[in-house]
Image 1 (cartoon, rainbow over the protein chains, first blue to last red):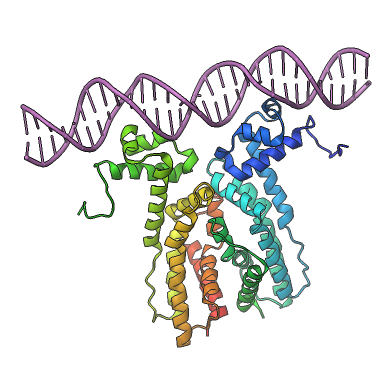
Image 2: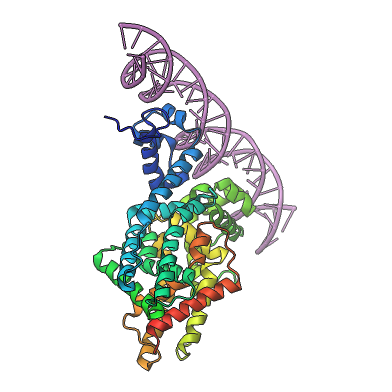
Amino acid sequence: MDVAEGKIKRGRKFDQVLEGAREIFMRDGFEGASVDDIARAAGVSKATLYSYFPDKRLLFMEVATGQCQRQAEECIQSIDPNGPPREVLRKAAERMMRFYLSDFGQAVFRIVVAETARFPGLGREFWEDGPARSREVLIAYFREATARGTLRVEDPGLAADQFTELCKVDLHPRMLMGLGVEAGPAERARVAEGAVEMFLARYGT
Amino acid sequence: MDVAEGKIKRGRKFDQVLEGAREIFMRDGFEGASVDDIARAAGVSKATLYSYFPDKRLLFMEVATGQCQRQAEECIQSIDPNGPPREVLRKAAERMMRFYLSDFGQAVFRIVVAETARFPGLGREFWEDGPARSREVLIAYFREATARGTLRVEDPGLAADQFTELCKVDLHPRMLMGLGVEAGPAERARVAEGAVEMFLARYGT
DNA sequence: ACAAAATCAGACCATATGGTTCAGGTGCGC
DNA sequence: GCGCACCTGAACCATATGGTCTGATTTTGT
């Protein structure tokens, strides 16, 4: 019944532990999470937990970096390099918003921002696994499109950052602050359209 | 000059306590800060501290909301309603960046994002004291300018949010993540110019 | 079936922390 | 100088937490 997933370290409860830790850490942050809570949530004894991970920090790093990588999957978008800008951008905006506004995306973001002082390197991990990658994808597309004449982008790096930031408009900061914001399809569409419109006004041909 | 100010502040060490708490909370967050550390940093005995504040949470709230209000001062910009868009926006961008990229601004932001779950209302406080206000200022200006024909903004709220977000481009997220970013005058200028340029391309006349 | 490996529940330990208390200082108005 | 409110320093308490250990129980490979 157990799927031979591949590089299972040792013991069956390993993934279980990680899953519990994920849940609690994402909910309570590093300091806020207690090891007992984690063990309970994982349905595992503390002894077992400590048989896998030497201490809390390591456990946390494992979870956090894991989430960062998992984030990568959600964030990487294969852009059709031949598509017309308006459509490509629209899709890219939706992808980005889907991540940044999801519970998961918010939790990761929150954790990284909060714990980056206690865990140097966490921020970089997150950055390079996620934002940096989609940034590269965007840059490549902007170069391509500029060469083909469907866009006119002088500074692709800046343009990519701007577009990314435009996708966060309104919804993202307000959700982070715990304001009661429902980011329904209508709200998302408004922001996405706003982003595309603005971007094309600046860099369109 | 001392008695006139707001609330009942009995005792001389009151401000000292607040100052120490500010320092430690801003550095370590809520959970990370220990009351002993705070007392030490404030140059005050724990007994004195607890004679002013019934518990740690209250102390934190006092500090946090205080910071939020202090933030308001830094963020509120009296925009010249008659100025030409390019100049007004440029100045606004600089103001915003000066806040968001300062140690102070980052610390407040980090605290709010991190502790907003533990302290509901903190986020709202921050929001309404700062971002919401400058948002209103921007909106008013956009309305004015649109009426006068120097801008063409259909959705002033969206435009204000977009402009705000454009001011965060690149520097803000990367600093939050603890990537080693120096936001010198050159980098700021690049972002500010980029923001203004993009905004005018979309909403200029 | 048997032994080794893994896991369990929970007692246990050391420490840190929030918070209290109290016997004395310290400063200040009178 | 006197009185009094404020402040101090440290001892103290209760609790929670990270982490260890043990002896019993279950899983697993063979």
